[in-house]
Image 1 (tube, rainbow, N blue to C red):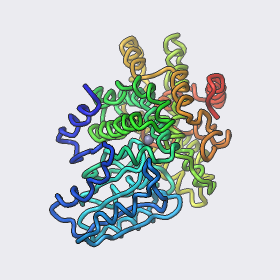
Image 2 (cartoon, protein in one colour; image 1 turned 180 degrees about the vertical axis):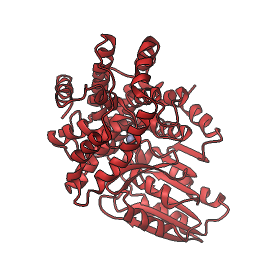
Image 3 (tube, rainbow, N blue to C red; image 1 turned 90 degrees about the vertical axis):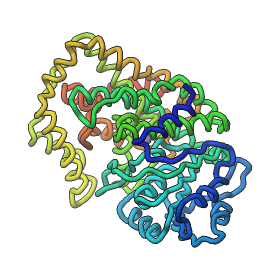
Image 4 (tube, helix red, strand yellow; image 1 turned 30 degrees about the vertical axis):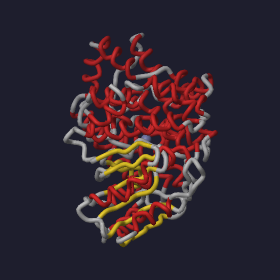
Length: 456
Ligand SMILES: [Zn+2]
């Protein structure tokens, strides 16, 4: 099956609310005719940021695109300025800008699209993607900043994604490299999701959703160099992967197929930098580096299991857990809202794990480990190969090399505490609950990462 037919097959699934995806050179020029075909488009809200965007020929295209849809219509433009975050005030501004429109057009990439998906509500929402920077376009979920904590919230499907190869090739290379980094999470996230199914977390594991993008893993590694150099054909392939990944999350009704511990580490870095008033690096840059570390943790844990040296799983008491969460997060704001938000999610996870007798569940899974090991090994990838792809694409290999670097101290904090942030089960939870995610273990993983050329 080709990538394109895979995407079309997914669009045919009744659960998918996306009407169409156009990936082509010049795709943006289809915007007027798409609006024309909507039942109502007299009032169109346009949502964008204040960055200039150029095609691969160096032509600015934002104002030309707006001019092309302005004839006979009222355009309500909302420009979100500066470094845009999907926090409550920004979402409220966007929502107000879309209130009186028949349809919404978002021109931008990840965060803009996440905001647009919330602000558009049930109105037809057309996204003109300015980069293949993240995998969160083609789904009905948005990552928002709620009380300072990154949370995945239900939003709405875009009506159409317009992915113009000329625009992708004109995007800053760092954005497309970020898309590659975000996609690299396919080498750890599905394994985390599979692991979480031992403990009846989330809405359950689906092999179809988990492998929808993972089966293109070798192709992703192959295009890494081309993506780094903005080779249009490789960017178009990346855009298809990014779309398919979004569809897999939409079809699964959860972000788990593409979001595991590597994403939690990235969210932790964003939160820490927010609290320190420091700018964030691009999401995918962080995710790419974090994936190397998570794959190393996976390898260590699988080796422990294979040698029968993984200690039994023990749950902390609620008091102990609450102390750990508050110790990890209470420095972030005076009111303690971040710690409170994280504890409310972690408490639910702990209660659930207690309720289902997590220690027994793990023991049972270990008794049939042969089958599980085979599945996990098919989902995971060698950290060295991941490092190789990041290196070929010119992406950062260390958090200190990000566009906005993270300090070694922040990286250690993010790794050591990421399991305390949300109600998801990843390899960090398994390691923590089996006593194999101590400060020393975190330092060991960072040391191993340094040996493969990656890490803090
Ligand atoms: Zn992501």
